Length: 216
Ligand SMILES: *Cc1c(COP(=O)(O)O)cnc(C)c1O
Image (cartoon, rainbow, N blue to C red; front, side, top):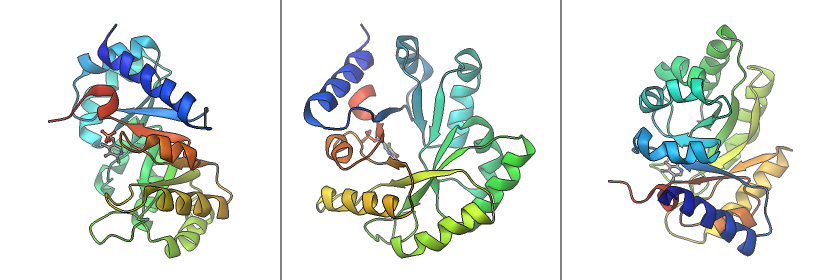
């Protein structure tokens, strides 16, 4: 059996044993990996995959998605507004919505092709200068504008927490923010902290290296 399949199975088993949250969806983050490394997982039946660049996603996934209709593709990286048109076409979920210009552009582009992308609002949960995402105090107004003005399908919140500090504190803050808006979905947890994230209510875990191996 291919290594990535074994890795996925161990991640699932570990989640079953060490977390209370057995319904979390695993997004296999395939950024930088070529199609031949991804195919075994697709053939195994895995459906959720994540990429962080629009152009890379188009190159790798256009044909794959036509062949495998059940695949759900997630954009987990920053989205430039000049790439929204392409992003809306190829992705089923976008995790990096964090400004009004983007919200407005997504509305326009998805109307043109009659599609309703599932969206996460990205939160800069550690208030880090260099990180993308809204500050928590900006969320409420931004959310209502997205829903009322742009008719966007906001399903939840996403974060990439600071590298240092107590992950659990950040994850719990995210859970509380999500619940304060009555949203259902929470995208957090990566190869190093997915158990903790799952235990704090994450239901979309973004796991790359633990499944595909180290990236260059
Ligand atoms: C690359 C990436 C991941 C996956 O990271 P791993 O540590 O390899 O699991 C998750 N989320 C985002 C936003 C990423 O860019």
